[in-house]
Image (cartoon, rainbow, N blue to C red; front, side, top):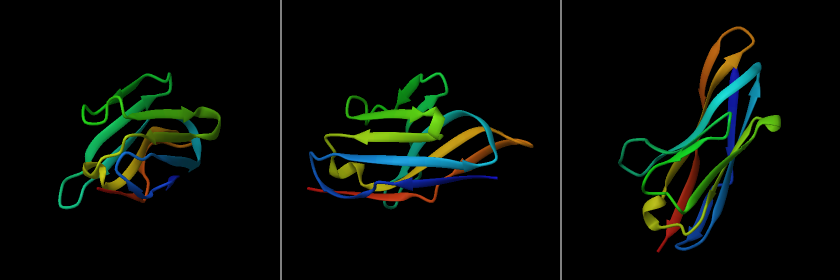
Length: 119
């Protein structure tokens, strides 16, 4: 079983920055892709950014140029640097990881961390 724990959310003014972290732990053999999703109030969960083990990245159009995803494979941790935040970035942010455990493949989600951007 693989667990993901997020940290770094909070309240920030528009134009500010936050850095989210998500650490994976448990019976991990390898992690293929890691990513961030978000769920704004009253809306469905949406993709934000993703990164493969080879560090190839992709982003939602709404965050390109403002957010940067990175990972530390040695620590099984993924980060999301969020700059120039806007009120519409307000959401619960979830990390996701997919890979192989000691006995089977896994796809795990974190518990979510709240990001609130005030205008």
